[in-house]
Length: 332
Image 1: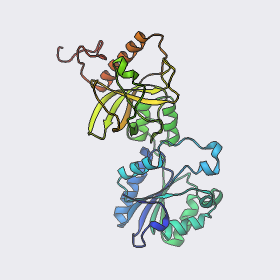
Image 2: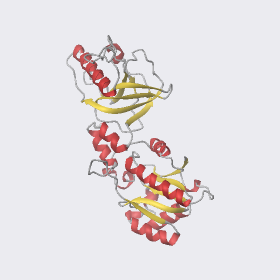
Image 3: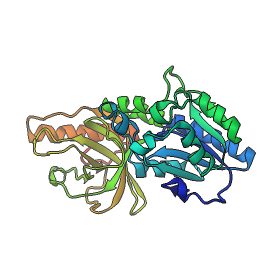
Image 4: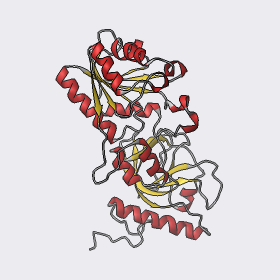
């Protein structure tokens, strides 16, 4: 996928395009439905598919007091858009200058002159141009003047629910740690990626060594608590089942910032320092707890690993921590 950071970077001979416009925060299942529609339109027209998005949430400029946290970083958004099979993405710098552009100028300078759009896809609540004066109806009027059509995309609902798929819903779910439903809304597992860093090494001392991720990550971290999931080591290509902790370690109360720690189940001697890893969250086990003794902490972690094993379908290994009360399928 080609990444353009300015309309001027689009080659004059790039050809006609089908452009989907939006914030695309999280690149959730609703966004993916839009891109599938764009690809069908592009195949019919012999055009290229382009996502037009922004380097920040427009509310951070227009109404910073109402701007929510981003679900993903800009770089992660670009990676997710590439996974959707698009031909290109145009990342616009959303600043005061862009916010002040008249709607008609946005259309002519970006969509017509730079992208040579044949079709534009937008949601029903899409607004653009100075003061949000641009609407899908105005876009259709301008399309008639500049030889492009407008597809107004209907809301996407998660199967089995009556709620519209949205980035706001994902934020709400992550705030309470419901990673299973958040993953369903996203259409992919909730995950964070980063380079493993050195921590306090307390997990290793307790018999449950963990891979610690840095404080700044590429996706929103779910609520404090303990989770089951996977640790994907991009350095080696190995995927480990994992028990994951998110929080500030209230038992010892000596961690200043929230951190993500993943224990690779059955890999006590694993050395991941400096490795590029992704931590995927699949199930929430419990909230974060301050234990009253070291013994109760170890028992609690052992119970967490047992639950993670069961949920992830990892066979028990007799004599290994985190196998208490787990039936060994080899002896049944």
